[in-house]
Image 1 (cartoon, rainbow, N blue to C red):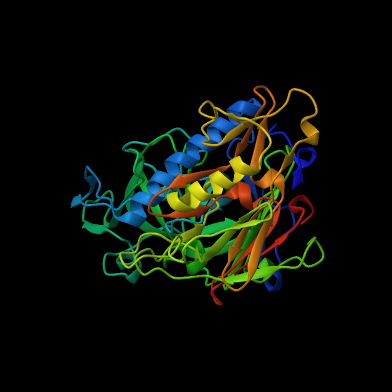
Image 2: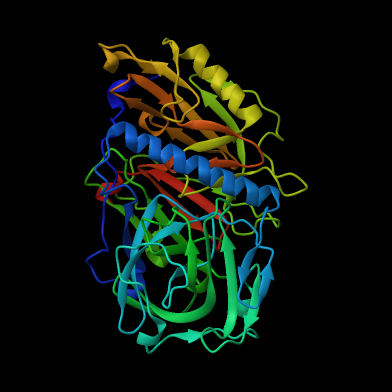
Length: 445
């Protein structure tokens, strides 16, 4: 059992900026991530509600993509109509980077659930508001459109050729399932990351971009497993991140790329554990793992081996995702988890609809630090156990006294969210098809 004295109240989101130390090529790259709500001046309840709302939207997008639910409308790219698949989009953390020569600084959402790197470009047909100037390809000496004959154009899930003087080349269209979308042309450009110049990175130069989901940044940086992701384009063997607690107003979340990405042995508080990354041919961009079981308190929950397995039609399975705050489990597994928590908690069940969570308990007005909650452990293939501290799966809204489980049901896909990942270093060894994790005080990494 975990004491609620360890539960930190949700008071603000993590903040951060581009790392000040210039990278050394032999050590890889190190940057810092900013939480999307870092500067919003939100109340505790508002922060939790916003995280839950974004998670629900993102889960719906991810499930739609995994289950192949057809879109109800077509996104039009110059050169014709494209039937556009749903992509993940949105996210919880921002990365500071720069584009072009001379370099133009901007922030983009980091997304392990998608591949394309894209930003808004002039001249805008339709662009959402962003806090930094919109990139103008005409002002950069290193901008080059990608021809339709290029392999990069072929790596897009959907594309078309354009021949207009304004936007000749390989046109793309991505939609994100809730009327958010980006359309434009694929190009290459020099990006600056942690003061390191990265020439020839393929990106989407979007001149028609819609939706509220990107308002915190000026685009996305995909870190998925597909060929157009930044990870693939830079030829990285591995990358890692360590997400600070959302309760830490001054926390910094490091993103480590390449040879800098290994487990920080000097900072871990317990040995690292590893589990194989699994490939799903139907969804090659996602980082799948094999979840073999759950333990609540001292009780291992009995579930069939198929509960979290990838099905023959490509649905199901479990992905690790940085852009979803809440963990979502397939309904049978979630129901068993919920039942176990209700049975082992000594508090009455409360209504969590205002927060946006399914299972909440009413904490006492006094002595809340004496309340005990059951342990939660996620078991993975290879014997890896993600033994979570209480603050990684229970959140307390002090105003209402609601103590809520940050796990929800889903259908078609399970997602390990970033609440459960906070203050763990997660290492994605893409070359070795392995995911490793260890508890770390991320602010000290």
